[in-house]
Image 1 (spheres, rainbow, N blue to C red):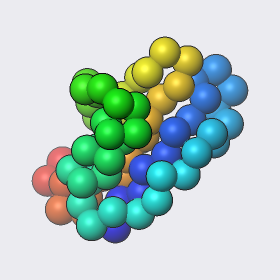
Image 2: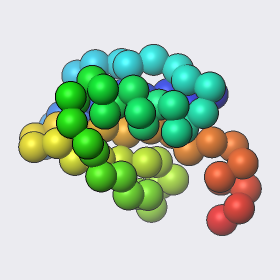
Image 3: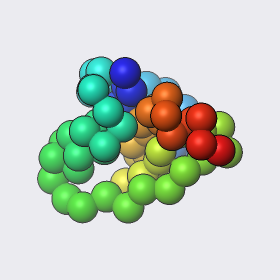
Image 4: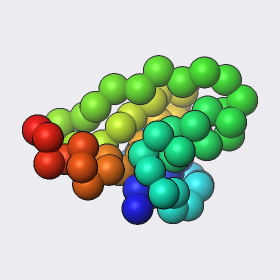
Length: 70
């Protein structure tokens, strides 16, 4: 189960834990609703989905099946 979090981009501090979701897609959608805008997602080297929003970063853990395909 992927977890979604909002992180301070400068300090790395956890600003808000948005919780656990059934899939990474559901978690990314929830982040977009939280930000109240369309977010553009990229895959980080440490296998997280990340979307930058000013000085904050939304990050979502990848689904297990997504990890297995790389």
